[in-house]
Image (tube, rainbow, N blue to C red; front, side, top):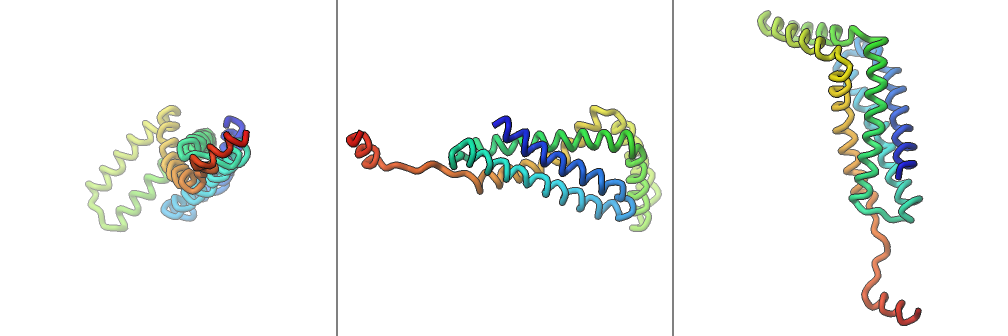
Length: 185
């Protein structure tokens, strides 16, 4: 299981990390709402490796069979590897290349609030909330924990769906077939 999990987890993690590195710097230009959609689309694409990993495990290790529980365990472990790769990539992106990301996002939210006619009191509250968030988010361990929460639900859903689709029991033998096989032996 270890080889399958690491192989497909690292492939998915590289896909997610490379595409995030390639698209995230353009978040402000395309708009944060659209960037969020692009980000989750990239996550879904990378988590397709969960499906392929479970299928590979079923065919190569399970001789064509796998229980739901085993499939879900393989999927969860692949999800964990992909998610950790994403967290590591984000740590590099945020702390080395995009330290103003939270400020840029806060400015976007404030402008959106102004455009919708929010009161200055509400805008000030949002500014304070984002200031506190940035203070917290600038701590690497908290940043990593928050970042891990982004891909995990996507991976969990894909693991669940993949496990349901790929579970496959071995050939069921009826009691009479088993008895006939024992007599023949």
